[in-house]
Structures are given as structure tokens and as C-alpha cells.
Amino acid sequence: MSQTPHPHDPFGTEPGPSAEQAAPTSDPAQHPHDPFAYGHDTSRVPSPPSAGEPGTQAPHLAGPAPAPAGHSAYQAPGGAPYGAPGGPAGAEQADQPAPGTKGVYEGPLSGQLLSRSDSRMWGMFSQLAVVLGHVVSWGFLGWVGPLIIFVIYKDRDRFVRFHAAEALNGAIAVLIAQIILGIVITIITVFTFGFGSVLYPLVGLPALLQLVFSIIGAVKANQGEYWAYPFNIRLVK
Figure 1 (cartoon, rainbow, N blue to C red):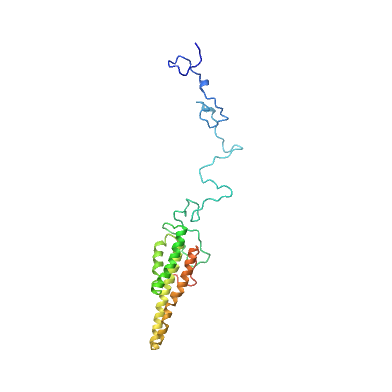
Figure 2: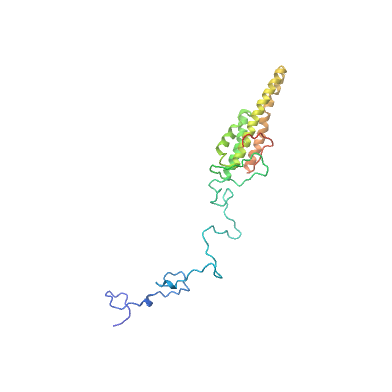
């Protein structure tokens, strides 16, 4: 009878291969990661090189992969790397005020931050709201729009807070100036037997001045710039 192993022998009468014959024939040197290259003999599995051996490099631990040469890491709309605080989910914009800019709030913000585009948009709207208020009410309601935007976004975005506060303070200053001018012109009118009434159009002069400032401020906000009015009372910051 032949002693050649027969893998399909249903009675198992034929001798099977020995342990050495059953072991895989893969060369460990050619297949260092082949789990079948060593059979059940774990002593032959090469241990990983230690970091201290010459010519070896410590394994790379978990962490952000460095950007390839000539490429920069992805920057979120807020200017910070994607996923970092100030990312695209709503982060404080990268626009920064020039040194010495008046009226900039330097405290912490506690609300959900805005994206850079939304920050510029609401900063522009806070200035345009003054224009709308002055046109509708001749300057007496120019503070309403900036006040609403200031209350909503004062804890969410420093840029919007600055422009809303600047517009609101300007509108308050206009209102105070108009009241004072109205009182003074009224007194003059009384003492001049009505001739001083020709001065009443001057009551709208402060609103006209801030109208110009607000248009400039809206353009600057749309460009991402901190632009302070040339003069302002700045009661709100």
C-alpha cells in the first residue's frame, strides 16, 4: 500500500503529514507580517525594534499628520484649523482691531460664536440700521436697530458687538444733541419773538452727521475692519 498521504481518505487510515510538513513554507524574512509564517511557534516572531536602537525610529503616535511640503493645513472660516476652537461651526473671526482702536470690548464671550461671514454681515447691518432709523424718524429712532443687534450678539461676537455699540453710542449721542439743540433753539425763538425758529432745521444736523458715519462704518464692517467714529460718547461697550 502506498504511504503517500491521502487528504480525502474517509477512514483516516492513511498517515497524515508530520508537524514539520504541515507548517507553512512562507519565509518570515519575506513576509514579516504574515501570521501564518511562523505556525504556532511564537518564539520566531521578530520583536519590534526599540526606539533606542541605532537606525530605528520611534513609532508614530496618534496625532495630526504633518502637512506635506508646500501645503498648509486646512484653515476654517474663523482662521483656526478645522476642528479647533474657532472653527467653521461658528468661530470668532480672524479680523483684529488696530492698536489703539477705541470702544473694543476685551472681555470673554460666553455665547456660540459666529462664522466670519456672519460676523461681517451683522456688523454691517448694525450700521445700516442707524441709517434706516434716521431716515424714518429724522434721527430720533436711529438707536433701535443697533440696540437689538447689540443685545442679541454682544456675547457671541466681538466684531459685531463693536460695530453695534459704536452705532448705538452714536445714535444716543445724536438723540442727546438733538434734545439740547431743540431746547436752545426754542429759548432763542422765544427771546427773538419767533425769529429764531429758522434755526430749527439745525436739530437734524447731528443725525445727518451720523448718517455719513454709519455708511462709512457699514462699508468698513463689510470689509472686516474695526472702524471707530471720529468722535463718540461710547456709553455702551
